[in-house]
Image 1 (cartoon, rainbow, N blue to C red):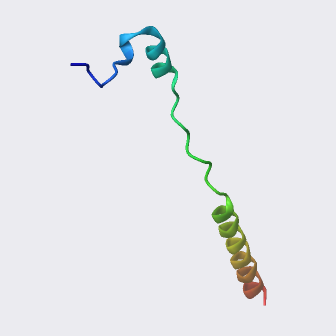
Image 2 (image 1 turned 30 degrees about the vertical axis):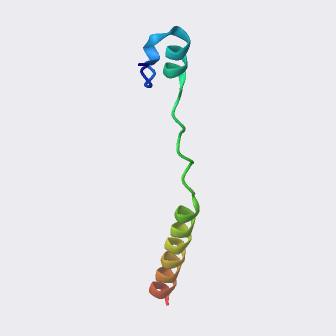
Length: 54
C-alpha cells in the first residue's frame, strides 16, 4: 500500500520547493484612518485655539 502523504525531505526537488516556498505577506494597511484622525485632531485644535482667543 502506498503512502499518500509526501515527505518533502524524501527527494531533493521536493525539499527545495518546500524550503523556498515563502508565505504570502499580508496587504499593507490602509492609511485612510490615520489621515482622517489627523484631520479631526487638526480641526479640534484649530477650534480650541479660536475659542481661547475670542
